[in-house]
Length: 110
Length: 120
Image 1 (cartoon, each protein chain N blue to C red):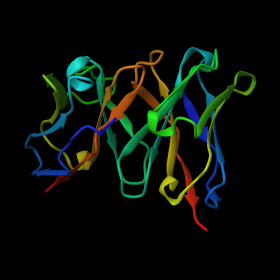
Image 2 (image 1 turned 135 degrees about the horizontal axis):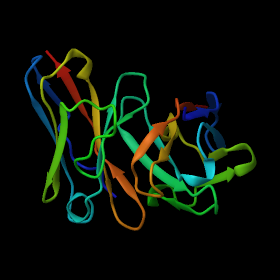
Image 3 (image 1 turned 180 degrees about the horizontal axis):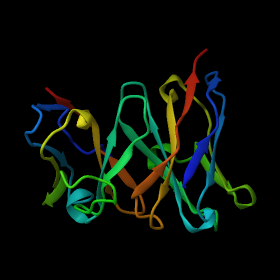
Image 4 (image 1 turned 90 degrees about the vertical axis):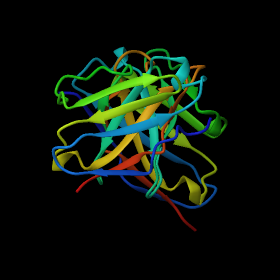
C-alpha cells in the first residue's frame, strides 16, 4: 500500500487561507468517505482535526474545513494563525480493514 | 479524561524483538479498538495495524505481517505491540491511538509515543 501523496510543504501569511491536498486512488481516498486529517507539532503526538472527510471533532476551530473530490481530499485552513504552523497528515481507509497515511505536509506560517 | 500511557524508550540490537505497552484509562477499555502507528526520524506517519481488545482480533498492514503481534490484557487495560527481527529501519517513535468507532480509522486519542532505537 503506497502512501497518499501530499505536498511536502506549503506556506502562507497569517490571516490568509491555505489548502493542503491529499491524493490517493480509487482503492483508498476515492473509494470511501473515510478520510481523516491530523495535525502534529514538533515532538508531539498527532491530533485529530477532521474525520469522515469533512467532520470536525469538538474543540477544533471552524477555521479548519475539508472536502473530497474523486481521488483527492483537501484540508483548508482559513484565517491562518501562528499556532497552525505544524505538520499535517491525511489518512484514508484502504480496504480490507487497513489504513494508509499521506506523506505529510509541513505548513509554515510566514 | 482519556489517557494512553506508553512504556519508555528502548534500545535494541538488530535481529532482536521489542514489546511496547500502552495502558488506557478514563474510558471503557473494551469498547474501543486500538491502533499502532509509527514515525521514523524526520519521516511521516505509518499505520501498522489495530487490535480489538475485547476479542483479541487484529489486522496488520501487509508490510508488517509475520513480524508484528498486537495483544491486549483487559484486566489491566493495556495493549501491546511486539515487533520482531528488528533492523535499523525500525528505529522510530511508536504510537498507540484509540479508534473512536470500532475500526473506523478515526484516531481520537494518542499515546505520548515510545522511542525504539535499533543499533548494533
